[in-house]
Image (cartoon, rainbow, N blue to C red; front, side, top):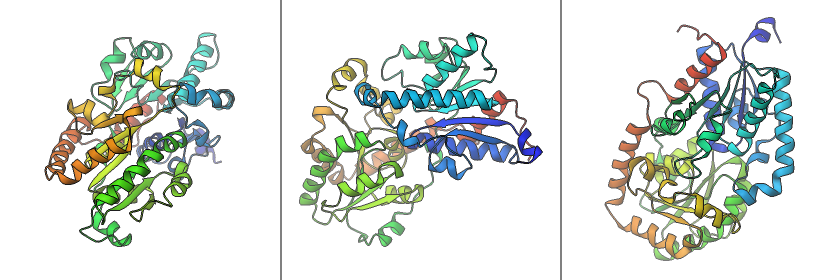
Length: 398
């Protein structure tokens, strides 16, 4: 390492899920651009962040768990990785720590570092988190809790800051990266996948975590069979991410509809443009589908043990992001025992048969882009400016 590189500010990043990896990679690109490349990175991240120069401390797949009873079997390893990460942060003494989503892991790291700071430990660098806990959907008390051990919060939705500012946490709306997602080329993908131009296309997006994929796949598989029986020319596209790609490929081998499994951002957007209707696991991808104007049915299942707790704590009207942001049902949502093949099939068929569905979704996409954007500055640049300020980094004039 050269002397100049050694003096370059160090940004420690933690992102443990596919959506967080996208955000982390965008933040890294923006920081490199605004510093003329004079910035270093360390931490935990996925494939996209590695492409931007991050050497991950350990595989992010170990962090892809959620739900009370889903986390419990992984708790020993999770706690071991938290201790390892805290030790690495203390050793490296970065100019700023930025965690991105992965709250079960990230916020525990912050809490430990804050305790060390209170005890006089060498934790003089700012503690930032990006992607707020969904306190507007469940467990609102978390807003007060995390406000005690974070220095700043970067949020993706314009309605979120008041939930945390009420408790004294400096909170900034940076915009959602999906608001600037590129248009896809559906015709290109249809040609490559040998899908006839007029054949109806169903997108199936079963999630980014192994547990949710396994729980949803039986209902999705049965729905696909029912829909192919109803629409014999139906073709199936299955965009996925690297962490579950092998699992997904194995699951769709006996599906009708000549399923094509796709990986990568470019293929995902081309697939969106080729789809007539989508069946998708609840998560960030449902917002991306809404922004692409794809009529979408949202499905989700948690473990039977987690479900009773979730029902008491979750505001189901706020779970689907497009519905929450626009204040109307853009994407119907089927959870747990309501997430049946029959229900999913009926909802998807209604979207295939309703000629107004795509027009309604196109209007919703325009409204969402207006709500989630921050003007001429991209969300990743907005976030990078805040991170640079916290780290004491002066952007290079352009």
